[in-house]
Length: 333
Ligand code: NAP
Image 1 (tube, helix red, strand yellow):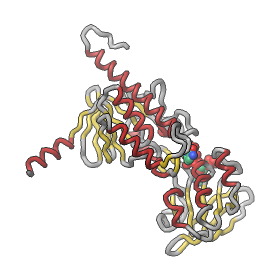
Image 2 (tube, helix red, strand yellow):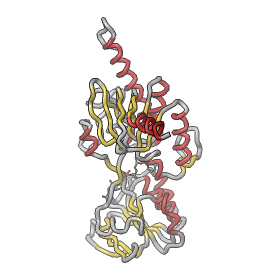
Image 3 (cartoon, protein in one colour):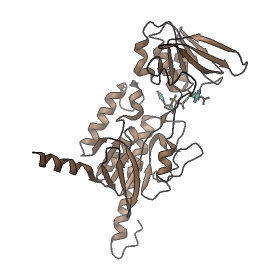
Image 4 (cartoon, helix red, strand yellow):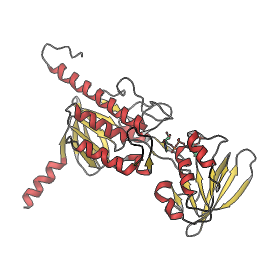
């Protein structure tokens, strides 16, 4: 019995694949599906299955689904790719090295995965305000996910939402159904969110929009009791009594990991891609929010599409490798 278990453990420690896909969001699943359709042996490694979809509630803009819960969509993505035999591992790749013409990756759990091509679809990491009290009160009034935590603020006197993008709008709208009052605090005079979402917020009777203003401190004893804000135009400072602060200020690239892969980025740290989602590293492709393509317009559909194109790029690359090895071939396809 123990011998068999030992053998099983060893078998899991080394995986051979054609395409290794880093990430667990729509781009990763799009890449996995199309890799499998090209009959490539694909492995997905993600710390969080679903990526940013885990912070979303209902999706209303994915073609074919008038309304679907994000969690259900993630479940469908996973089931779909697994039906093709794609392995989905919940783990984190900590290192990818060149080995011969391919790559060898190591995960946090110690699994080694070799691959002919790699698709980087790691998404972005959450931005933080970096003000006093923020870290201290995480989970005690400070939240980065309105959809996950809004219900905890049922009948709260007041809460604040920080940000001016789609997430902040959706958060403010949702919270207005739970808390008696919502302050929507944005650092500029204009919102970058989709107009339809801004209109919805403005139609709510209990949302006060506070523009040109930043949060300078989150205050409290055991949990959040208020925030200090400063108007950037007038310099005026004031305190707002709130029991919740929802920080919805977007996401940024994990520049350290990207650098470790040797990938070229734009000035903001997004991976530069061209053609079929190729990067500057031969055999490495990128897809989704982490790329410099269509920055400022991030949707499930755009990520899935980029993933599919990256898989096509990986397929072409792997076919090219095979041709190069064929005697008499120039390797050009
Ligand atoms: P985002 O679009 O990047 O917006 C972030 C907002 O936070 C911006 O208004 C930004 O201000 C503000 N901000 C950034 N850093 C800040 C700081 N240090 N202090 C104060 N404010 C700060 O992020 P998001 O709203 O999370 O959306 C992310 C992506 O997901 C977007 O592409 C969005 O379209 C997409 N999304 C789509 C939907 C949907 O389609 N229903 C829903 C949610 C998200 P500035 O405007 O001044 O830069």
